Structure formats: C-alpha cells, structure tokens
Amino acid sequence: MQRIIKNDQVVDETWHLLPKDVTLEELSNCDDLIVPFQLWLDHAHALKARDGGLGIWLEADEAVEDIADDLQHFQVIALNFPAFTDGRHYSSARLLRERYGYKGEIRAIGDVLRDQLFYMRRCGFDAFAIRADRDPYDALEGLKDFSVTYQPAADEPLPLFRRRQA
Image: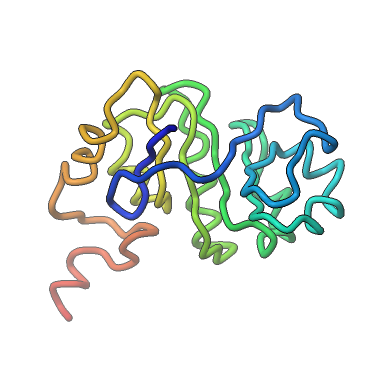
C-alpha cells in the first residue's frame, strides 16, 4: 500500500487513483476513487450516483477552470506533475483555493519530490503522493525547510509586515 503525506503526517493511501484508460464498467460502486478528467467529462452523471467517495485528477495541460462548476462533487482534486520541472499546477492549486474557494483536499501526484513540498503547500496543496522511489518520511521534513515566509500565499494570506503589525 502506498503511503502519502497528508495533514503534515505520513498516512496510508485510502483512495484509488485510476489510470486514464479505465472504463465506467470497471469501477466499484463503493470504493473511494480519483478518476481521470476525461472519464468525468464522459460519465459525470453516473459517477455522481456512486456510493463511494469521488475525486478527480488533472494532467498539467488540463485546466481547473473546466471543473470549476463541479467542485462540490469532489472530495479530492489530484494535480499531476509529469516532471519535476513542470510547475503549471502550482497555479492550478492557487486558483482552486483563492478564486474558487475549494476547501477539499488538493493532492500533488506524479514526479513529486521533497524540494517541492514547502512551495506546494504555500500554493494550496495539503496532500502529497511522493514518487515511489523516495522516502515519504524524509520528504515530510521538506515541509519544515523554512520557518518564516514574507509573501502572502494560499497558506498565509497576509505578508510578514502585516502579521507583525497585528
């Protein structure tokens, strides 16, 4: 069983991240599933009628604006990083939190490494599926790399000088 970082601790993964080629007929009615964007587009009505939890995952070239009207249906939104150097979903997480007010879990999946976690959390991520060849306990320490932040972000809306004035 895969272990993920969630709420600043390493936990067992309970959701099933489905591959892009899965069909509706293959899905369990009661498991907690994170479905690919295209499956949601093709079968949203049937997926909403399931008994299990529902999440969605987006590739780096799929926009959160395309699911903005459906956010209330998702308990988890997983954003895929196809490569360590591809940072497009940093903006996606920030949009979900700040523009669309999404309160559910935003999870980083794919090529996710320790060096990214602190910055991902600042953008709105609260769960991380670390690359399989990396230690999640070591990666968890990446959330503590910096003790003070100056700029406002999704995790702290006030800049440091405003926090000091308060």
